Image (cartoon, rainbow, N blue to C red; front, side, top):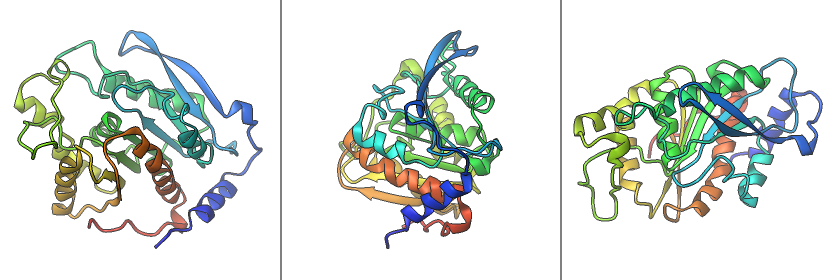
Length: 282
């Protein structure tokens, strides 16, 4: 059944109130001087059409995939249009090839600590809410991995979490069916299976209890089996998730199609009164 996304977004915009932001000012780029990384990295911010003055505007941190950057979604006309309609701030940090984790193999590669700095910067700089009810995190591919794992390692900080074709049973040994594995970047994760287990989001699902979780799976993506394992782990613990299965592979065009779905689910969460309960895991 199609959900009334337009009404949900419209209602949330009415809730936010306030003057309309000037169109030319709604997409901005800044630099964050990261103590964790010892250098500055850029971040792009998309502001909603209307903002309130009470510091309660929802915010969604959206993490890019491997080989992409903080403006990849902005540079896509389809994705930019979806972000333009989002009823919340969307913060797009530059994650480089860091997997949004503090690397056990490279002590200076502290990308989880950097991501925490991005969250703190947004709270200092933008009129956003500071509670889990007003804060979400999402991402695609490497960013889907990073979003879920960061939420797991910062329990209670994000009320909404979403992964689009994320690697959610990773790093792991290459024992999945043909075409369903992904080589572990050992320079980032080490070659130690015990370390891999500690970094694998599959083993931290209990920390997502109470979180509104959205997963987008690609029917032909190499990460599909990993996501099925993650869903099974959620189901074994009675943890609900909303699941969107899209035809296609592990490709940016699928991310473009998935983005409006994720933003609609985020809008429902941020405007809880009109949101239906999460769908059970199929």
